[in-house]
Each structure stands twice: as structure tokens, then as C-alpha cells.
View 1 (tube, rainbow, N blue to C red):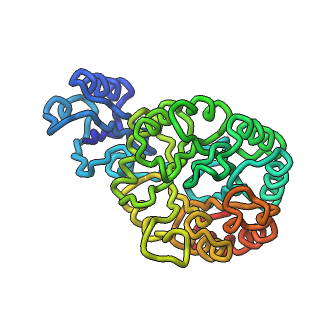
View 2: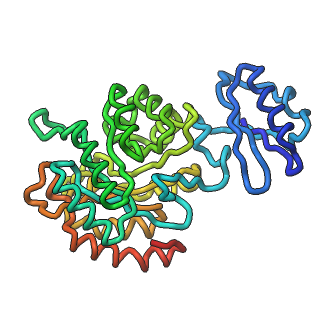
View 3: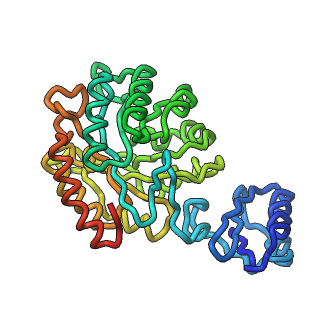
Length: 337
């Protein structure tokens, strides 16, 4: 449920409500707003007797939350959330672009690509140090060395780093060197990993699972937020269907669906969503037109030599063309790029 405070409620009134919630063995989640504060309540196994809270000083009304997910719901948090990643706001009125190689290969390769995407307008740098691959014989990433390379690229360009974390054992290591932790599609329902990432307090970029429903997607985000971490960014990256002309089916209809029922920002990854270089730019345009808060694309200066996902990586010149094409679309839907 959601306890909405009156505009005139004092900080003492809010703390009194928080204390009452805790006294009932529940978890309070204060949500400051422009005009008033609300306090979300989680942890109940069934109906909660609202009489214990409705007569407390400063309480305006109590609203039941109907969704199985609470913290990600607009019922809990009506206004859009903006997640800061290394000083870059994700969400709001600005369209952000994450770009970089699928995998970190060498220092020279990563810094070269980082400089190229920075010069062409990227906001954040992506790159995999730990790579989950379908085949055990594919390149698995450089691990800790890859994290150090990403940190060096950040130092060189000023771009905050987004990189994937694969398991609970490496959460603290990745969190110590990255600006944002990515939870990949294969790990969307790795609940212990979600909880561990949530406990770091670092922004989490959560990718939709390959066959995940919208509810499952949002409940995965709930796991992170239930650990006290509000900094969650959703990412649509395609789902598995019968189509055989792309790697996945990019489900852009999920963007307005998420926007209607959740306050979290949502990005789109057209590189993994299509697996085809010639489809990345058109689907990026469509994503921004559909209301996405940004895109995450793969860029490689020598895609034919890439150790991972070369066929879906844009060249730096193609990335420059993408940025040029996205600007008028972002402006048309009331955003800047």
C-alpha cells in the first residue's frame, strides 16, 4: 500500500509514519515528491489493517497497490524516475546513448572506440569484461583485466562505464570499477544476483529475459529495488520468437506499456535485438519515436575482427550517421539528444 502525506506534513509526521510501519514488521519506503511525500509499504503477506496508519498526524490517504510489483509501480511513484549514472541523467527529457564494443579486447581497441563514440555524441561507454556466451568455446572476456581497461577508457574520455556482472561472486569487484552494473538477459531471473546488485547501491541496467513477460521483467526490477536501491534502468533487447530473419524480435510495444505502469526509465538495445548491422539504425529510430529514454548500441572500429558480435556492430561512421538521424526524432517527441 501507499500512504500519502498531506502537503503540510512535517518531517516529524513522516518519521512517525515510518516508525509505525516498522513497528508492524513492515518495510517503509519514503518517496519525496514536488508537492508532498508518500510512504510505500512492503513486506506484508496479506491485507494490512490501515486503521493503524490512517489517523496518524499528516496522513492524507491510504492507497492500496494492486500490482504484484510495488516499488516499480506508478501507484507507488507517480513521477518519472531519473537515474544518475556517473553524472549522466538517464530518464527525464533527455535521450541518452550508450555505445561501445560488445567485448573489451585490448586497451588500444577499447580506448580507440571510446574516443570515437565520445566525439560523435555518446553519453555512456558500454563494454563487456565478463561475457556470457552460448558456446563454452567462444570468447568469454578478459575479466578483471577488462575492468581495468574500461576504467582507463573512462579516464581517457570521461565517459561513465556500463558493464555486465555475471554472478554474485564478482558483484563487489565490478561495482568497485564500473559506474553501472548490467544484468544480462540470461540473468534476469537470477534472484540472488539481483539482490546482490541491489545492495551495492550502484545503478543497475536490467535487460529483459529472452522469453520474459512484462510482469516478470518488472518483478525482476522489484528484486533490486527491494534491497533499497532505487536506481534501476530497464532495457528491452529482443525476445525469442519464430522469426528467423533477425537474431531476436525487438518488442518495441513494451516501451509504452512500461511507461504506463512504471516510473522507471527504459532503454532499447537494437544491436542484440536484431543481430544485424543494417537493422540497428532503423530500429534505433523506431525506439526513440516509441518513447524510449535512450538506446544502447555496439560500435567497433574493425567489426570484421571483433571477438564478439561483429556482425551487429556499427562502424564509427555509421554511429555518427545514427546520431544525426536520431536528433530530429528526439526533438519531435519532446526530448533532446
